[in-house]
Length: 279
Image 1: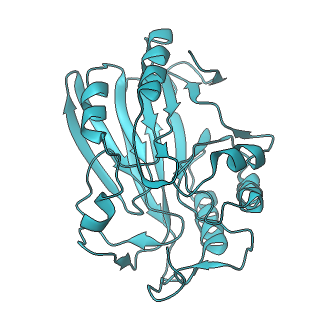
Image 2: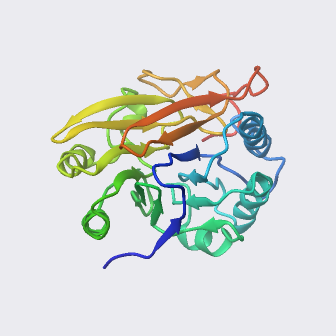
């Protein structure tokens, strides 16, 4: 069944400018910490950094793990935090979210749970890679059908696929146990769709940008730092990185190409502590 889409009117041949935030792990208590980091304050610092950068984005994507404690108030806290940016925000669930609670409390004038976003020459498809009760992910046949139906409905638009779980391994042995378990098959399937130009996700709390040679050209594979704690890349055991919280900016060009960069909070204010309350 073809899912409802939301459409943004942009000038012909205009780029679509997107800011992605992911994995804030908020609590009902704004003073609560995750591994020594106050996640509400780290999100606030990321949002302040976004506002300080001269990049007028068209919309925000929030790619899961909004909550750490499954509370309705944690989602209210997220909505309150992003409201000053005054831009539409589209969200999807992560493995730390309760989708029922999330959909009930992620409410606001510019907060959207639609799965399909039409903007400029692009179609952005928000996918659910979560498996209830498990930290790892899976891309179900029903999600593949959403992609196929959306592409058939808008065949002239380039496609960005957005999800929570990583479809490729990031070479962190402990973390790769919780990847998308059918990620290779998923990439093989979407690589056959000419319109697909990029895959974007969170979950891994680290930056990654690779190019996959698909049947019809390059597909960008991108993960984005968390707005709170960071995981150390290429670690075989659980390890935290001293890098600061961050976010990703994307400029989706009318011709199907894209420009993207990761930005981080300046300084060294947020220092995680592995011995503090656990992930």
